[in-house]
Image (cartoon, rainbow, N blue to C red; front, side):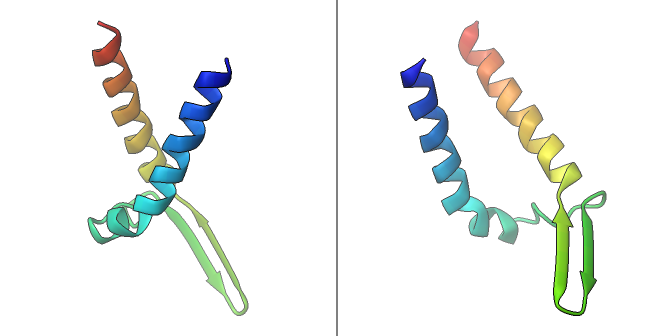
Length: 66
């Protein structure tokens, strides 16, 4: 269990560091992502981006388990 938590933590840190590069590719501003901007307040909820990343991770894990 500890190995899985460490692995998940490392993957999350790597994704966090890679996020600016992914934003340049267009991830994070796809149709379906919710972004509300008001004076002094910004709310961002990347629904479509999250679904695409989830599908990719699921596909990768499915390939490695075969």
